[in-house]
Image 1 (cartoon, rainbow, N blue to C red):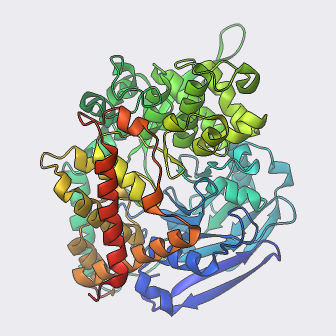
Image 2: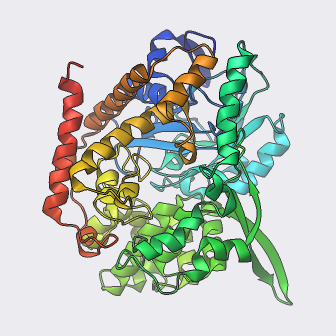
Image 3: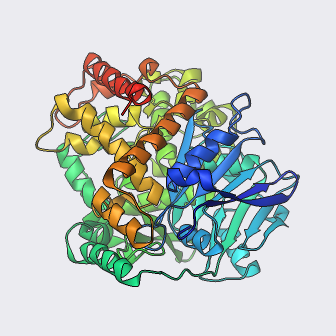
Length: 582
């Protein structure tokens, strides 16, 4: 919180139904966001217990600049991932950062397990533990509707909820935040489900007076004008991230048919232009963002005889078009939107769900599993059967779907096909196979996400060089530790260089230099690396599926020995963080 020399932490014990608020001066050095969340997770982690043990905690945190500057809209969740068995780090927008700020909490720690299904109602002065038995088993949209009717503070509250997949402990279950945003990756939904926690409602109404209005307004205006009046954010508002579908297909970098190829002749119906022309009905934004990157698409579904139709609206983006479209051979925008609606209904991470189904389809085709296990024939492009399979994953219908619910790495270990289970360190791949940067970046990234360091972007640069790739990926990982301690949306990363962050912090009374911010980013990254070590992760022993080397990324066919050398160089740079005297 601004104008204070401490971090305010709310700790909630679900087992005892108690809570305590503490003021932590020692956490100020970690700035906020992922910095304080990593440190708190390090303090509370119990590595002698399983990821879904009730004694494990979840940490939510907002950043040093949350809500008071444009596009600084995210909340981070840190936890032990049941999917990868190591660092769980996920981000969501919506109104959550705003409501935590208005409720006067920098971080919220949740531990223990409720005796029966509950939801939490959190405000600046209390935490209430409320019965959610009647909500258990309901889809996330229904839960949101019920809580909106029960809880006060419309417009000043944020509602988090899990679906049936989280209740059933699917290892990549997501958490829906304010309908259109999510803590998607790495299984936070399963962690909340293991705690009998169906939902969280955070309500805040407190404001914050700015002391130096002149300095603040100048910095705010500079950032705001760049966001609205330059090309830096234009694509995110116009077509949104789906603008990249046609370009990535042309680059031959969009994973298709379980990464058997990275190009499709029939991409046009799945491009951003096609979605906009055929399905887009409106755009919206997270609280505090002037851009409006959330694109809502609509499809029509028949629900009864006699031409009875309903219109269904869901948000869509590049990653979902990849995972629930090209990766599965699905050809039309309506079919992709219906797949998105299904993962929303069940509360599944869309990326992992699609990539897991890609492995299952190829395993079925190769005879590793049969229809007695899959229950429906899985073939690329058969969207109706994929919809049924998603329901089976959420319900954990049989042994096969229980394995799928643990992720593609776990399923392939049981049934075979590890060479084409497209995951890195247990986390299903994102929508880029562009070259060495995309694979290296996800392999070494702290949470094995394409967003850790944007490695795929370096592959597409005109000045790409293997000689500088490791340095660029490493420096970007550090910079994103800084951005995620503010917490700026990564779509706005070019608006928030270190100089701009220095000015923004100075305008609210926080004195930093570019050098001190980089030093803080290094300490944050070191905290993550210590956590990964405690989880047992060894980067140099990471085994990658052979298909990453069989299918060219862009125009580059990757060589295992070259990638191994890059990973050794990166590991050496991480080791140097702990031995350097600078």
